[in-house]
Image (tube, rainbow, N blue to C red):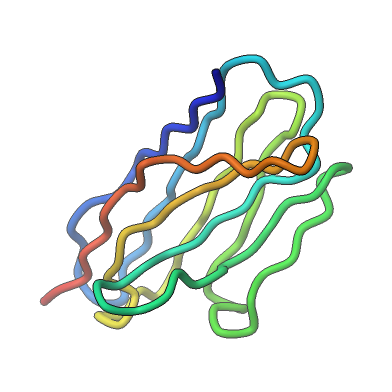
Length: 115
């Protein structure tokens, strides 16, 4: 059984930074990619970026310049560095893992940006 656990969420002030982590465990023979998403209640889940096999990363234009993705596929770990946070970044942040045409999701970690 594959599990993903996100951590690092919390309450921060506007302008501050936060780094989220996601670690996958379980029987994972091959990782096609790891990704970060976020979701605000009442809205669709938003893709923030992905790290593909070979550690190639892409970040969504909406957060490019403020968010950075890093990690190591062989360690089943992905990070999301978020800088210059605004109240609009308040959401639940999820990671996912793609393997053999299956997608696995973590339960999410909440991030609240408030003054």
